[in-house]
Length: 308
Image (cartoon, one colour):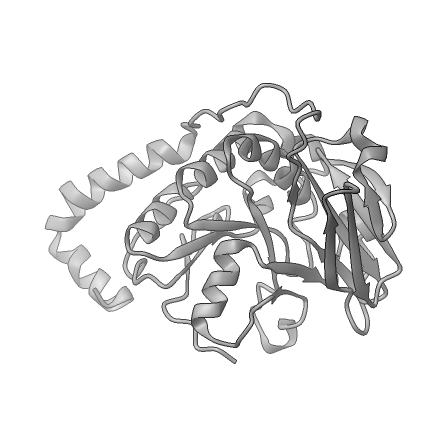
């Protein structure tokens, strides 16, 4: 086990659970969360030298709750999150499958959409998975395998910042169905071989039945090896894979496609999205700086509730 310093789930107690995980930075104590505002905690943690990742975004988009995958393709969401990753390198990943995957199944769609915006602009966004545990009986629902050469905090941080990890879950509602629950050893990637000369990527692993390859949000191949020349007409700016088996699912990160003959279209720079969270944060600043900072009652309540 590792004692990872200064871990905190930021934006707590907001209605749509727009949570951000912060690590390695002393930020968040006594800070009022604002619903829908991912940018502020990401920015402030970066200023203090920490890293962040975005949690269960499906709680915010409600794509799965409404059973509407197109919600995860809406520009207002794709641009909102792509913009964060382009503006803040310290935001290392987005959650694509957490807990029992109850709110996140269509977050894989959102990840694919974000990748198509960020990769042409120089940023490959990693995907992360975790148990989102609220009790000891929930600790093994999902987890991330960090490819660390040694079990140290420094090695963990390097793995996080370089995308050297695999997401694993025992639930995969979009891929394996609502009723599926993994039992036994989970699929795990044990080796990746990229053959630049032959334009092939080969995965080796254990505890899996099948491997599926995805590009631009569409399944383009199956099997241990993908021959990129054979699927060049379906390739976008990346390809990713997932392994499925009786124990669950394992996701790779996206492999960036750099071949000059692949048509990626014109790079599109995501616009800044000024949704309701922007105005809520502005209101919070006014209340906090103008009204609440001078309220004796508020100062006492804040001291009692959060210790600051």
